[in-house]
Length: 491
Image 1: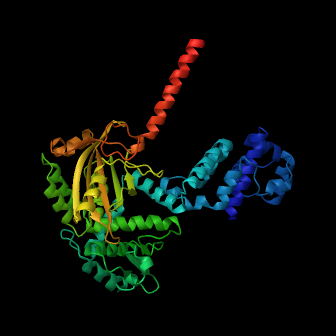
Image 2: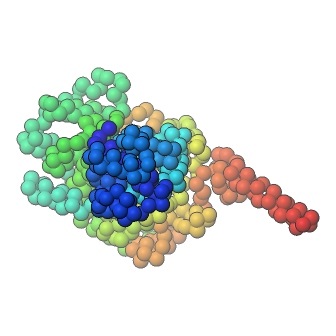
């Protein structure tokens, strides 16, 4: 174990023994002759006492010396010891959320039984749902995005500084050849566009970077927009001087949290470079000022950049909160196989509110009234390149309405596979002030649920499963009513 964790464990044990004997720090100081500040430093895990000091504490508190220095903890502190030994606190990005490790340890040690029961519960839930370290890392990054309204001014400024230094015109669509030249001339990259396609097991990867030779291996079925994004991301790793990074796109595994965070920052940089905030804001202002929704104009805005619809929608989650103060929004990405009735929510982001359309890991059926699923059905049946639609989704259980815009495209790397990307904007006074076309009668408005198993909408023609959770709840309510009546009659 690391030395600092040995200090922490000794400090926890000392504090536990002291509190069990109803001693204050002042009282232990008088009893042992050691200063109160010194004992406080020990209990916080900042100092480890010398053997003669441990001997004094052992004698005065009547605890065997070997027990004092043992790393074995009793049942109340055992979960803390497991956490410390696993080094999970080193992997959790506590500083990202302004939390000091010592503060967290102090909270835990102040109520070990209750806090450890909570920690054990979280661990058990994570194990039951196969919640991996990678899942934890990704969830941490999402929380970090949400806490910052998914907008990072320092990266936005870095993009502007880079564009000026390398004379990139952000008023025009950026082509991959322009960024490729920078990678070659400035960072010594070489490129290989044949090797990846020789390996069938790598069919899901778009790129692999070999750092020793600065070789970027690329899948040859990508379009120019996909190449541009990959090149922009590689530039970000170099320009922002990130040492900890991922070497494949899409990712295979993470070695540490810094790789996950830097991967996000590099992607953010790429999106900000390819989809400049100022230009998109101007286009959106024109769109939002119209009394009716102009679908053709929206599609033109999406196509005005050398970027995929997914990159554009993700960029909206950066720009809308900052430029338009529209902060109550969500982003969803679904995947779907043609001739299948299964839809998988692969990526989500929720700003400000805990929105209803969330990933469900219990094999329930997502509401087929969602526009995200409708566009997937349409594109899988029509084989079009891009299917767009929007609707107002009303969640009666939450008493919330969202304007949801959604696009579906073909997955370029998988046969008969499609993906949809959606952004949902909470309809409130702020949105009504910003978007004039909200009252457009042509925009469909539907009541929706989250999953069929939890939906109370009657006579739904697209229901995939009965509302078993609601039926169970109603049955329990009836049982409670009958029992209450029996208690009243015979009481």
